[in-house]
Image 1: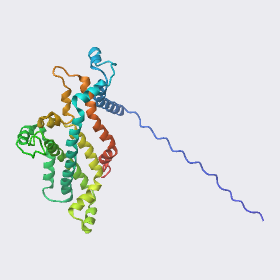
Image 2 (image 1 turned 30 degrees about the vertical axis):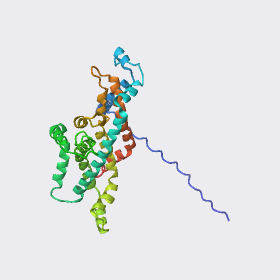
Image 3 (image 1 turned 135 degrees about the vertical axis):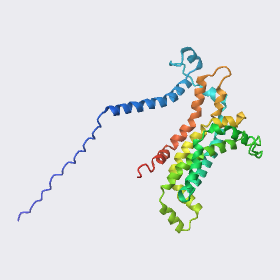
Image 4 (image 1 turned 180 degrees about the vertical axis):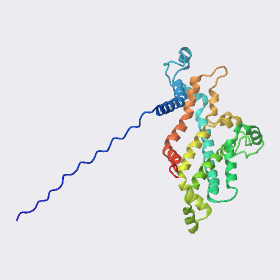
Length: 306
């Protein structure tokens, strides 16, 4: 009796994936890429030019012009750090920026939670009032704010001048007032997209309004808060106008205002100022790269929702 043999069909080779088709190079696409490249070059040119200028000596550029290569040195950074006293002024910026950012995000999240969570007639009006602060030019409030700051008293342990003027608290309050509107607008729209079932389940479990805000809403808003924190640190840290107007003591100036110390009485060393500007920009770059993932995630969340 012969045993029947079973033949297994040869394994078929996996089909090779078709190569992705390249989009045809159309004139509109070429123009678009050229435009984007020009915008990128125009955006990066001032930064690269400042870095290049900061690495060259003033004597060389005065002799050969700025459109030349040579005269490389790091002395500008050492001189700028000592002349502008960046060590102390960096600490001043920290004293102003950190409390201002934390207060802005906390107060804005509270207002945004009320606007997004509760339905009442003044929701749109309240949101409009907070957003209007971003539409009003800050210079329009210069005179009334200056007069208020010179008349509002503070305890001596909070201000050496015993006034809101020439104090860290004054700059903190100004930045919080002008930045809250934008943060309320962003956070309120973000919170409105959160499922209402979460709040209904929390209410069934007996959660109070505060617990709904702190334990339900805030953990879900971490990406948006991280994105806003990155922007607010950059904006408040780089603020120059109010620090110049509402401060008079040079030792209290933030680091951006201390760049005025690099200006000469009769001429200005642009190489030295460029080195100081690069030093001032380093902390914001570090913060951006540390929070880059959260920043991008906070901006792209909800982009695919219909």
